Amino acid sequence: MDIQMVDQVLARYKCDSNTAVRFKLVQCQNDVFDKGKEFHPTFSHQFFGDNETIFGYSNLEVQLYYHSGSLLTYMGMKHDGEVNKNVIDGVQPDPVLSVIAEKYPAGCTTTLDEFIAKLPEEDKFMPMGELLHSYKGNDVEYEIYKADVTTPRLKDYHEKLQTFLLWFIDASSYIDPDDERWRFFLLFEKRKEAGNTHYSIVGYMTVYQYYAYPDMIRPRISQMLILPPFQKQGHGVQLLQTVDKFYIKDPQVLDITVEDPSYDFMRLRDYVDALRCRDLPAFAPENLRSGFNNKMAEQARKELKITKVQCRRVYEILRLRVTDLSSAKEYKSYRLEVKNRLNVPFQKEKADIEKLKLLLKPEELTATATLQSTHERMQHLDQMYQELEAHYKKTIERMAAA
Image 1: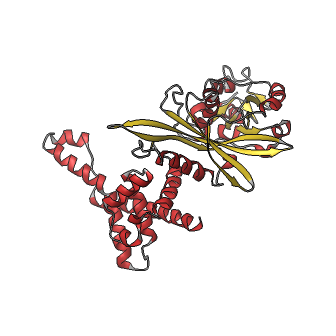
Image 2: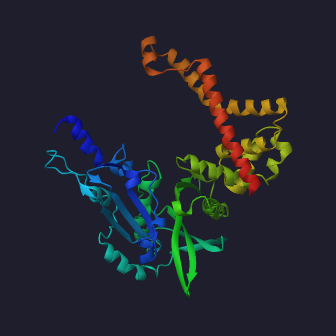
């Protein structure tokens, strides 16, 4: 077989792993066979490499079905055929299920009939932990619970729940569930049918409670995920607001930080924090127009446990909100203030290089550090500003619709 024919044969047995993997959250047998309940991962490179490709199967479907409450998991696959190793010597199909199973420490059932048979018993699942908040959306009830490593059933449940992270949050990793400083906030849908109550997981957040000198704690939000069937319905706002309120009332909490926030989480956090700061006296329109000050930072930290860095972002959002964009002078004043803040890292880098010039030879300096030209920096700064302003305007629009 010539090379071209080999390539054609191999191409038939390659597929995009993000398309091949199918998730379902199910409660009963009918759900298992309901194509409308399928959703796909956002990422699969932690399982199938940077190319996110599975080789060796034609029309492959990888099935990952979870009971929507207990998270009992079924793992299976189906396809129209495997690559024939006798036709192309030495070529083997990827060991798909074993690759996934390595990252599923809680285990899975690989027999669909067995999974279906267990669903009625799994439907008795009840949430664990302390109920913090409940709310309604589209006539459906939702509840948010707080748990820690001492909460009965939490450890086993979290072991199943965190498997979603690898598929839906880039560069995510599992946490040590035995560390007593972790707190878990679980969001469930609650439905009543025929006299029975059914719970389905909607999403969750993990928070690590760091020590802050001398006798305070600094909670850091580590992971947050709203599962795809429940996204863009306001649940992220409810979950973040509930966690914020829980820590705001604790006098031992200094402020609330976030670990490597994604763009989506930054959008959510900016919106929630801007809504809350809008009503603080320090953020009154006349104060906003006078520029950022320490009173804003102190009031935001004291009243809402917001860090100074995040407070500055919130100030810029609220300042833009009260800025008359039709006034060239007023708009220019706003842009310059934001750009000056964005330019701080560049100025620091420039100062550091000036110091290195005194210590290194020219060739050593060239190998160690490079600095953008003034023109390049201005272009980059303008691009950063435009992206930030667009983000701020979307936040302001969302606030207006709240």
